[in-house]
Structures are given as structure tokens and as C-alpha cells.
Length: 317
Image 1 (cartoon, rainbow, N blue to C red):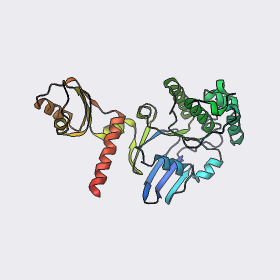
Image 2: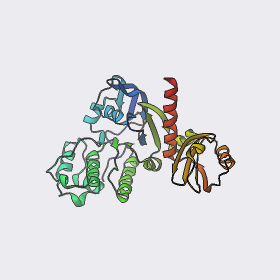
Image 3: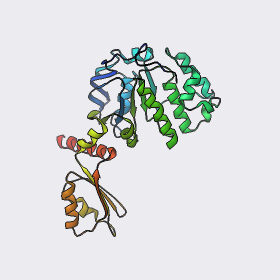
Image 4: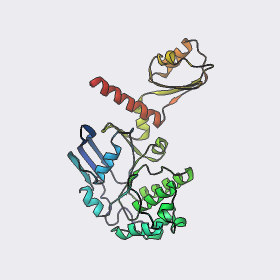
């Protein structure tokens, strides 16, 4: 796609925050959806936003896009309000909520987005970049789930945005479509744009993001690279198989366990002292097969961090 460079008109100024949340709070009745949230995003970053259901991810994105107003604190995009940044064509968004116009063709819908964007790309280039040129004449209501996602992506990248916000962007896409999608997004980042995406596919966050934010009950509880998040979990993963049915009660009483999962004969343990836990397994008279001790993947680290946050909240009640 023919895109302007980061030094072109409207590009983010070097050092200027793309997004700045400062002590932001948002509640819905008695439920605090976002609590004292402060974060800053910079030009050229690829940032993954993670969190369990109810963590406040969607509310944070809504506040960022001006779809909701904060109860207190401030949200700024490129030093202005979200509404001003969006009106200037600096923000593109791909959200799960909201349907697509029906009874129009893909090209007509994408063409409308291009017509409305103050810094639009040619519609045929947008279709090609989103890999939907071959369905340009198909009615929107005749698309598969993966095709709808690619159309939403086309709408989000119809012009030269400096910030692209993606909410679960690859849901419904097959493996090859997901790979092609992220290849396109890498091209966006290479142009100096900032990409923020919320996802439940933690392997995507691990592979794609150079920064990971973890929300839990509206609070930012972790912010760093995927490697830093894994290291912060401070635990190791122990996996082995046992003959017969594992004794869950005995295994759960092993020392230094911070999490355990048993599926059939396979036992998966998160431990903050893998040596002591493994020694205790043998002390029980068990003979584990296929024993592996490794560092946590991002998914296991995410679970460890959010579990620890939940335990800390329970203690403080």
C-alpha cells in the first residue's frame, strides 16, 4: 500500500506521546471498570493489551477512542482529545462491536471509508493490503467471519493513521490469514505507526508485540516486554506423566506450587522453586515420566501474575 512516511504530514512528532492516560477512572454503577489507569504509548510501538474477561480492556479502548468519557483523569491522543485526533484522521480502529453495513459490496463499503478519511489511500490499494480484492464485488452480508475481520481491517486502514487500535483482530481467521494479517501490520509499524491490539491469543502477543500491558480489574498490573513479563512471574513450569490416576490432593500439597493442572495422566505445575517441587514429587514415591522443567510461556506467566493479583486483593479485603 502506498503509505506516507512517519515524517509526512500529520505524523507523530518524535518524543510526543501517541496515547497518554493519566489517573483515569471509569465506573458503571458500583463496578469500577478502570481504576487509576496511567500509561503512555510512543510512536512505532506494537503493544498488546491483555487481561481476563472483565479486566477493563474494552472500556480502556472505548475511552481511548472517545466512545466513553472518563469519570476522572485525562486521556490524550497526540496531545489533543480523542475526538480531535480522530477528526484529524490520525486514528484507525478495528472493533468487535458494531455491525457492518449490509446490502452493499465490499468495495462500496471500503470506498465510503476512503471517501470520509481526510488522508485516504486509493480504495484499490486498501483492498489489496487487506487481502480482500478478490471479494470486492461480494455483498457484505455474504461474508465469512474471517472475511468480515479483513473488511474491518480495511476500514481501520483506509487512510494514513498514526495510531491503529485493534480489538481481537484475528478472531475467525485461519492460520494463513492470521500470518498475512500480521505481516501487513509489521509494515504499518515500519512506517512509524503505533499499533495497539487487545487479544486472547497470547501466542500472538508473545510473537508480535514489543510491549505487553496486563490489566486486571481495571488496574495496570504489568507493563514490559514479553520476556520481562515472563521473568516477573518468577515461576517455572514442570510437566510430567504418571501411571494410573494422579492423586490431585497429594500433588496440590507439594511445596512451592503456585498453580496446577491435571489432564488425564499429565500433570502441569507452576512452581516458584522447581528444584524443591521436583524433589518432593520423588519423595512421594512417584516416578514421573517425560519430565520437563522450563520457563513459563507468556500464557502461563499471565495466569501467574493475574492469580497473584487476585490473591493480593482477597487478602486486602
